[in-house]
Image (cartoon, rainbow, N blue to C red; front, side, top):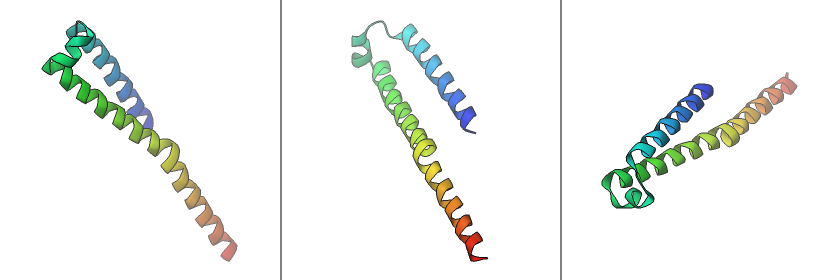
Length: 79
C-alpha cells in the first residue's frame, strides 16, 4: 500500500505543479486570486498529508513492529 500511496502523491504533486504553472502567471496571482488562495490551502493540506504519512512510516510503524517483536519474544521465554 505504501508504494501505491507514494506513486499517487508523486502524481498528484506533478499534475498540481503543471496545473499551477498553466493557471498562475506570477506570484502575486497566488495571493490575490481565489484560485491562488484555494491552491495554497490545497498545498498546506498536501504537506500535512505527507507529514502524517512520514510519521506513520518512519516513527509509528517501526515502534509497533518492535513492540510486537518484543511481545512475541517474551511469550517464547515463558514457554
